[in-house]
Length: 234
Image (tube, rainbow, N blue to C red; front, side):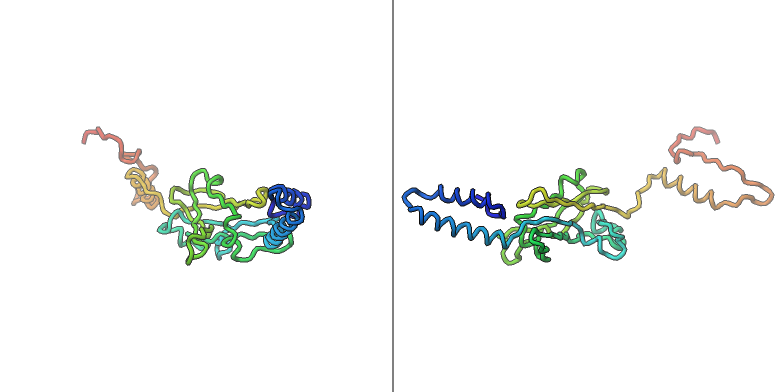
């Protein structure tokens, strides 16, 4: 039985299904009346819920000052990347839908039609970098279920992922948005790396001459980062 359809052949099949499911004891006149009432109701539902024909998926981050149109989120709230202009920890998910009747989705469309919208934070995220933040559709009635409100990082790493969306009543209509999970923390240096970096900074600051002596080359007793075994006699 078809509920959403502007296809007359499908409506005919729906009417036929209704008629054949009604017990034979009921007269044909009553059967036709019942089928008409049901199909009229289905048409009203279809008119109130036109099929989506195009969709654009985006995040709140892309419209922030300094974002340059990119969707970047920090690996966690404590990361210094949170302070970069245009970067947000939990950006809102924006869904712009156009329908077959020419109308556009209202701002509350994602919340009110959560059962018809399929958000996917898995197939475009093989490294498990992002996750959807779900909110109650009605804070006063949690039994109504949840809707995809925001996006955040899982904290498992940095890199690129894609959030995807599709529709139950139009499965072929899909969209995706690119998300970059970033960090601004400096890499922790090992003791060897730190000493080598320090030596380079000191060497760069040395004068080319000291009195009458020309400095042409510098040596290190532990060029591998002070990890060599020193067996030299002193």
